[in-house]
Structure formats: structure tokens, C-alpha cells
Image (cartoon, rainbow, N blue to C red; front, top):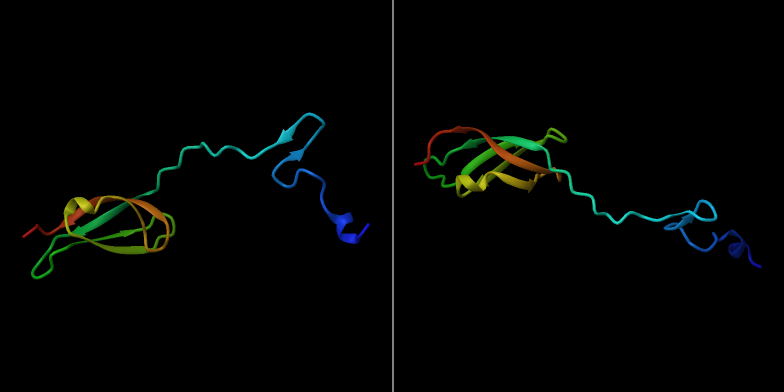
Amino acid sequence: MSRKAERRPGQGGARTAATSATTTITPSGGTRAKARPPLAAASVFAPQGRRRNWWYTYSCRVCGAYQFGRARELDQVTGIRRAGCGHQVSVMIARTYGTAA
């Protein structure tokens, strides 16, 4: 018998491991509900002058990085999105500056 054959693990592999003669451990089905992303409060700036988009800024609640975004309508500011830092956040309007022209 070769050395490689002697070092190989037994039948069953890493996914199913026998802990006793009657009990086996198998991976879960993954039916857990996803956790809601953290809430990020945004400051929203109304369109002004030649600018036609709403601007909004918020800080990521996971890493603290500040993000900047633009939306054509005020309703498009809120919702769940992936921030520029890569974390998923739920954006809500905390304060609005200016009025729509």
C-alpha cells in the first residue's frame, strides 16, 4: 500500500462524520431567516439650480464609512441597498435640506 493511501481519511468525508455507532452529523438545511440589514439614517439634499437629482449621504452602521448617493425621485432614496463599502444597509431619511423646485 502506498503512503498516500495510508493517509486518506475513511469513507464519509468531511460533510458527514460519525460520532458514535448510531449518531451522524449532517449540515443544516439552511432554512434560517435572513437578518435585517442595519438601519442607516440619511441626510437628503433637494435639487437646486441646474442639478435635477436628490443627493443623499449616510454612514454605514457596520464600518462607519460615509456614502454618497443620487436619486431622481425622493421615494427612491429609501430602501435596502449595498453601500460602496460592500455592506448591505437599509437607508431611511432622517433629515431633508431644501425644497424641491
